[in-house]
Image (cartoon, rainbow, N blue to C red; front, side):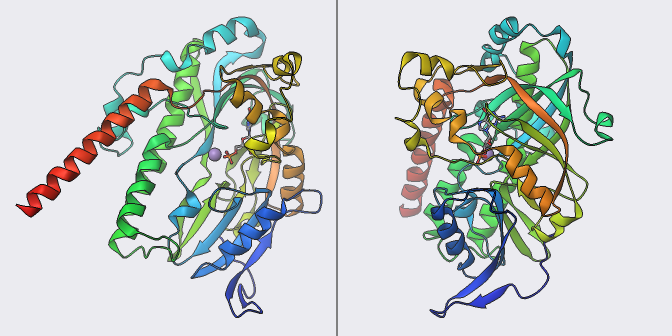
Length: 411
Ligand SMILES: Nc1nc2c(ncn2[C@@H]2O[C@H](COP(=O)(O)O)[C@@H](O)[C@H]2O)c(=O)[nH]1
Ligand SMILES: [Mn+2]
C-alpha cells in the first residue's frame, strides 16, 4: 500500500525538511487556501515521508480533512477524537416499491430507542472487552453523522447489478467511536504531554495509543452495525453488510504508518461509499490499482465548502427556508430536532460529490459503480442525554480512582 515513485522529501528555502504533497484533484475541485496551508504543515512534521490530498480536502481542527500522510512516527492529533469514524453501507431485504415514506419516517424516529440485546457479547465477538464503553454503542453522535435510507439512483458499472440491486433499499451509516475516541485522546495528551513531535510506536505512550486506537476502530465498526440494526428494526427489515470503510485511522505500512484523516482506507478491488449530501447524490465506487500511489486512500465524501459557523446567516433565515431544510432535493426528508444542526449541516455546506468522483476517476483511483439518492436522513443532536450522563459518571469515577491511586502511592 502507498508507495510513490520518485523522491518524496525535499528541503524548503528556509531549510525545513518537507515531504512531497501529491494532489489527487484537478482545478474543477475548489480547495480552500487554509486547507493547503494545513497540508504543508503536515508535510513538515518530523519523519513525514509523503502526503496525499484528495478532492474533498478542507480545513479541520488539527489538520486538513481529506488527506493521507505516511510517517515513521504516530501523530494522534492528525486522526483526532473521532478515531475509527467511517461509512458503512447495508442492503435491506425490503424492496423500494414497498416503502411508504410517511410511515417509514415515523418508524425511523424510534431509532435510538430500539433495545440492543447482549451488548457485552457483541463487544467480545469483536475481540473487545465486555466493558468497553457499552453504554454509547448504537448512538449516532452529532455533527455530520447520519443514518440515511437510500435508493439506487443509477447503476453505472456494467457489472454493478451483481453487487447492488436497484429494487432494494440501502442504509448508509456515518458514525465513529463517540466518546471512547475522545477519552483515548484525552488520556494520551495527559500522559505524553505535547504531541507536536509525534509518538514513537515503540515507546509506552505510542504503543498505548496504538492499542487503544485499534480498539476504537473495531468499536466504531460495531457501532455502525448496531445503528444499522436499529434502523432495520424500525423498518421491520433484515440487513446485509455491503461494505464498511473507516476514514479516520492509522494503518501500518511496511514499518511506517499511514494516517487517514477523512480519507477512506481502501485496498484495490474493494468497494467504498462516497457520501454526497442532501442535495447531491452519494456514490459507491470500486478502488483501482491507482490507489497504490495514493497511500491507499480515496475521498469518503463531498467535503465541506463552508464551516459550521459560516452557515449561520447563510440559510434558515426565515420560516420557509427553515422548513426547506427538513426536506431534500430528491423528495426525501430529514429527521432532526435540532434547528442549529439543520443549519450547520445544510446541503449547501457541502461540495458536490460528483466532482469529487470525477477527479478520482481522472487519477485512476476509482471506478464508479452506482449513485444513490437520500430518502430519509436521520440526524441526532449528539449523544443523547443518557450517554452524556453516563460519560460524566464514568469521568467522575476515573478521577476518584486516580486520586485513590495517588493517595495509596503516597502512603
Ligand atoms: N448522503 C449524505 N451525505 C452527507 C450528509 N451530510 C454530510 N454528508 C457527507 O458526509 C461526509 C462526512 O464527512 P466527515 O469529514 O465528517 O467524515 C461529508 O463530506 C459529506 O459529503 C447527508 O445528510 N447525507
Ligand atoms: Mn467522518
